[in-house]
Length: 535
Image: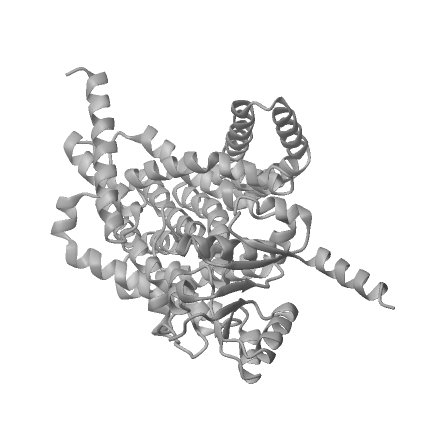
């Protein structure tokens, strides 16, 4: 069989196995990520390239993370980053620092490993999986929840921390280099990349998008987006940083333009395909024979590492968050991430750790990543063991109600709606993601629950299919849309009444014709005219 036929056969089998596996896993509610990883392991044994000679595949897979970071950047303008600085910088820095210290102490003193090996393990194990966690957070819309925001902030900081970690490993293996020189060069490079991207780069991005949008040719617009994305990634990489850093900055620049929503929808399928390739690449790194021989020690190390890392993250988040949010953040970030592969590969190439140790550590990372979709998929159930309170509707048993009205949100408008419904003796309940609002509503005697109405357990608990109407009073357009989409996906016949603030918002929601809109401006205008014409 020729090499071309062999390649085509491997591609055919890869696609076929991944498709069949994911159909089966979907039936059992298991993440598709595991299907891609399992496919990688199967194909690697069928064609004998487990973990070796697939650099181009790894590069393609890495661009899955690049596209993912680009879409995260699209949702984070500079203004949002400024608001997130506490979550991103403080929590991120504390998480990496304390995780490194705790895991180093355990490796050096408890397991009696040498200094370099202990340091490399602590640095790699401090990183979590951007590819798995952010993919889940975006798909489940948990990225908009408090734990989602905190997890995303820490993950972005970790991606930035990869750069000094890789530089430190290079320094450990190079006696002639001065750490001062390396740090100065890195600092100057970082300033150049950021200044260039937000000045000249921003002008280039705007010009390209405007020009290609005016042509009204979809392929030209998509070509412009790819040029921006890959160009920014290559610029960052040429200056010694990760590809994903450049993509993230490019996404942030586009976030401030009117094209951000279109760009994200246009590249979503490419991102999913490349991420699938990345997880396939992870699967090829699994050496089943080595795993079977060392299963006891691998299992012990990854449980031990995840447990201590989760404790560190829980303690950091608990400083200014409730137990539930802290537990969810800790559970979602406890695994060892994909950037650890780069750390172990570099350390192995520089002879700082043995090849067998590198293989062992990569397997520990992979096993922890395989476990992660199960943990995150059940994160609400798991976190409820830490704190299950009366107001947490994400974990309550279904309420026994029928033909009731669900009021989403309890700010000023929600309070007025609730008071009016009570005065008319209506059967209603309140759901809010603001704990203070929920506690206030309970004091007023209302049946109120804390939770997120875009979550399936909440939709089931509050008996949405039996509800007479769902009144959405939130002030955030994004939240109104999130909840509307989730409710309609759950029950296409749901009677949803949404307050909107502008004609533009009505246009943005026109793809949801099932909704009943109440235009705030129109209703206020009618009342003003009615009062003005009173005689």
